[in-house]
Image (tube, rainbow, N blue to C red):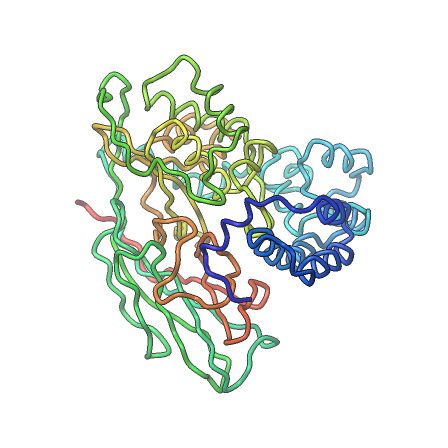
Amino acid sequence: MEMTLDQMRYLEIPLPEDIEKAKWCGDFERAHRLIRQRLASGKLPFSVKKRLELEEEILLRLPQDYIYSEEEGLRILREHIPDFTWEELRELEDKSQIDWIYLQGKPYFCHSFYDTLVKVYPQIAQRAGLPPAEESPEKKLLKETAREMEEKGFAARHIRLRASLKLADSAFRPGETVRVHLPIPAPAVNMKNIRILSYSPEEAVIAPETAGQRTICFTCAPRENRPFTVEYEYDSRVEYHPLDPEKVSPIQPEFDTQEQAPHIRFTPFLRELCRELSAGETNPLKVARRFYDYCTTVVTYSYMREYFTITQIPEYAGLNQKGDCGVQALLFITLCRCAGIPARWQSGLFVTPYSQGCHDWAQFYVAPYGWLFADCSFGGSGYRAGSTLLHEHYFGNLDPYRMAANSQFQWEFDPPKAQLRSDPTDNQRGEAEYEDRGLSYQELDAAWELLEMTPLAE
């Protein structure tokens, strides 16, 4: 499906009622049929036509994320917790601690439901025989680094990383032209001395350092299914900001306070939430802290279905009070902008000697401090674990274990991708497409290898 990112704004258009009803009772066959009938009528307003075209793709993707029936979900839980009961399962559903939708009138669980339960709810992890998350080497590393930053005023690491993306054998077409975009580091307040060291295949286009979502792009027609790779190095340096609301300037900037359709929107609900959380306070640092506290102590971490299937991500987070790192970051950004506080996106990878994986976080601007960080996911994890150190640290500060490739949300690649992206909003793993279609994440295998990480004295 060919689509520019500008067309994503039509997700704001509501669906006709009969299609909405068919969708949420899980009768996707009927929803598809109703969409095709309307598209064939030739009487639709242009905006509704584009909305229905997007919905056709959403209806194809939703069942790929919700793959377990209730019975299968209970079986998975009993594999790890033999005495888990139906009553407990229904209670988790009713408390929205399990993400589910109807498929043909029956609840089906998201593929990541079990991972969410053991990550977020310590009592379930304990019953499953898993060690407390706060005792992991990675959590200990973050606490040590937070203390290091308080003592030294900064933390810096030199990082060398190899990233790769391989097409699934079932999706590979020998000799046919394929285009692959891999994310690469981009200069930012926390990203310096970036060098692209090597890549394969050797013919590639490297996006400029100013790209909002920076990539290396390969276009070739391989005969063998080999991974696309890029090796790079950079310095990740973050300053420590001990924040004092009394030092906040009375004059604040107005950049990065605009809306961005369809997600960063000041909907009636989000305006009310912004007004409620900021009531009686005008200091932007204190207001941002209230938003952060809501995103970390009220909104609970949850693995998510594809972002493309959610029509308004910040509102989803605020209403359902759950979401993953990107969903929480978008809610924080939208609330800040709604209150006139500059805020923006940053994403890429979280990289430590123990693991490497996708991650999103936010930045907000308060004079005279300048750009500050807010990692609601890590802050919320600290809160749930009872770590005041980490909960406090990730409001205003970050850690040096990042690879930031993206400074903009829902931004076009350079060169652009022709087909609909697996994730039109972000790019952490990479994207691939043939001339006739884009490949889904189920057809791609992303991997990272940490080659070097050394502390920097300055």
